[in-house]
Length: 278
Image 1 (cartoon, rainbow, N blue to C red):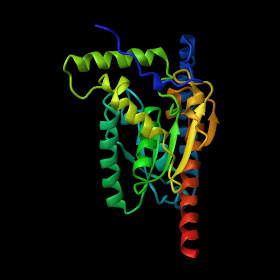
Image 2 (spheres, helix red, strand yellow):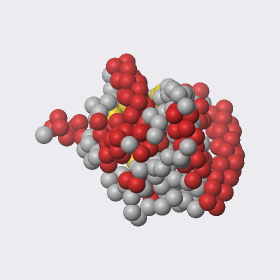
Image 3 (cartoon, rainbow, N blue to C red):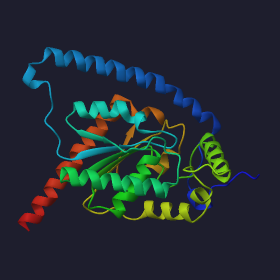
Image 4 (cartoon, rainbow, N blue to C red):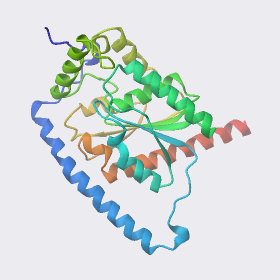
């Protein structure tokens, strides 16, 4: 049985797959995890020494939904969610147990999840998406700006989804083979080389609505995707020093995420004020 090939449009000219050796950079995730533990321990000591009334941060207005990357589930962003809650954000899981299925189906399910949160909270949500999760976030933001106030993408190769390490390509191949064998809920060949892939890619290239904040976090140390594909011109781009996997837990990255969420919320308020006074 032949190995499926990613559609050529997923790897446009000017982008490339990371070299085989770059995957060793992902070993720094151990240091990033250690940095998270040290930060958490320091924050715990600071809270204990602070007056009781100053131990909690004011609640942010916008709900925040965290969307995991390829092959991952909500648990991969649990540490980031915990930190953001400590910063005053109300976080929600995407309800994705493993991001291994059709991207269009995943986008539809995520859209339904956002609708339920918006109805419950009475306000638009912000989305933090890691890798493939960020690409899903961007597509939904374009399609449903009535639901999304802003997105923060982490190592999401929106400009060239095929510019990823060959280890991911091998994982896609396995999923496609299992799908052919009849296992439901997995990524099919149509999702990487057919109309499904084309639709997902086209949606990810459409202009972002003016009233949706857009921040793209990227790292030149990314060992999994071509960092150049992660920083579209339309986004407020932020460079960090972290591995691809480590972006989900490095406290320095989480600091940027929290600041971006606050900036999006502030920009939204300013835009509303302008509309009222116009």
